[in-house]
Length: 320
Image (cartoon, rainbow, N blue to C red; front, side, top):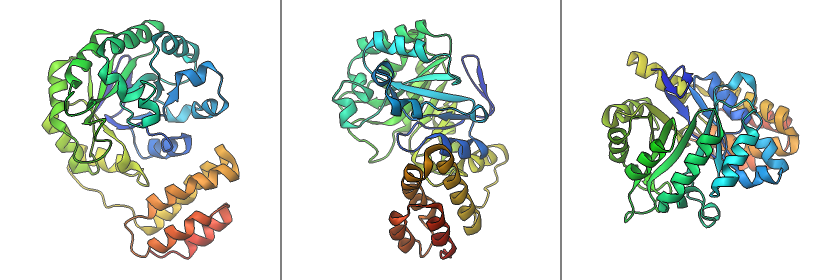
């Protein structure tokens, strides 16, 4: 099912969620190939752009073939947020997203990420100033609320719509929950009924059946898949095929998983060099191989990997 956000038309409504340390360029390219309708980049600090942080430059690297992509900014100062949005607008991203959902203490303690859920007035100022500063569509990612005593996703979503955003993504957990417990899809339904901009549902979509269930139970316009993509870029192909045909594709066999790991590793080398690329690859190998029999020993050995050759030898000796 197609989805339009502002003037950007996505070929389908299955979206890769922004995840720090996961949705970097190599991984996004693999998710695109497997059919993701929109790729969300790792979150970038507006202040880091302001100070020309070198690591932030790497985070903002985009390849033409991955588009459409969404670049996610976080911060809490409406002036810095809008000025930095304007500064980077000529980069080849298609949608700008504001992070109001990150639960990590160092972000929240700065009044950023999900801490903004506690301050509706500041939400209005940020979204209004950023939407006026740029021509590209603006979206915002929020949570159910900050904690169980402050469930205000509907109120915040209305403010976001009023302030000029083109869509809102809702994770059905509070900040207090982090990623524990069950996502509350009913809050997504409530937001969908309260606003007229597209609503993207997020939380606990880990299979094609769950994706269909989320659409049916909430009426949301898009599906955002996060942790279930780790070691599993095929999930986009599987969800889209199931939504189109009702047929469940078989999960990739061992040889296809091995091939994907090697391709991912080659992209890591290309974009990040051997030292960083192979060390970052360790967690991905652990994710790719989880669930296969006899993979625990491999995951133990993967933390020693420092080169492509070592990875190839390790995979050669792994028979699932």
